[in-house]
Length: 219
Image 1 (cartoon, rainbow, N blue to C red):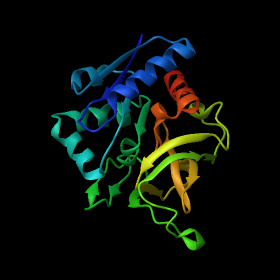
Image 2 (image 1 turned 90 degrees about the vertical axis):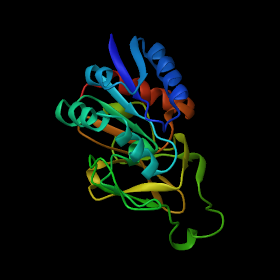
Image 3 (image 1 turned 60 degrees about the horizontal axis):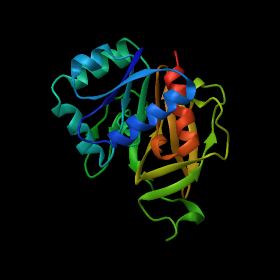
Image 4 (image 1 turned 135 degrees about the horizontal axis):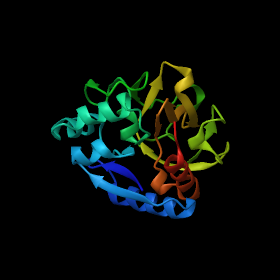
């Protein structure tokens, strides 16, 4: 039975994420051992790692640094051992090189991007686009061949709640966008890593399907 480690570093909607994984594993018929944990020994042996994130980029990065050995075990398992990794919301943003929320904060540098405050552009810049960006929004996919996106289609709606988003330097790492006064990164990824700006655990059928695909993914 594969172990999915959902990282507890004081900055995530952990209970809801764990429950969504339980539901997805039942739906796809694959039993998994779900561990909500900050124990680096458990993380070091996990088959899949999930990094949720709620709040501000600097506080979330500080949360990782405050758990002794967590940064090192994440780097070893995700980068060197190349096990499947999923970042959710700020957990996805932390994959970037740097964040500019309140201050300049170094990210994990796993994705070629930087995290900026959402600024509606052009004619769409008006009071209708308030921050945080909160609610359901349609996805538009930049690729149709990623295994974690199997069964998802343009126009599927997911649930977002954020004021900052990744701006990518590498177009091939952009897997899906949404629109909120302009294009916003919705899903990013490379190699064994994928991140969703939206919350799969709050996105009903679409979110559960993505989590099921992640459970079955063998990059």
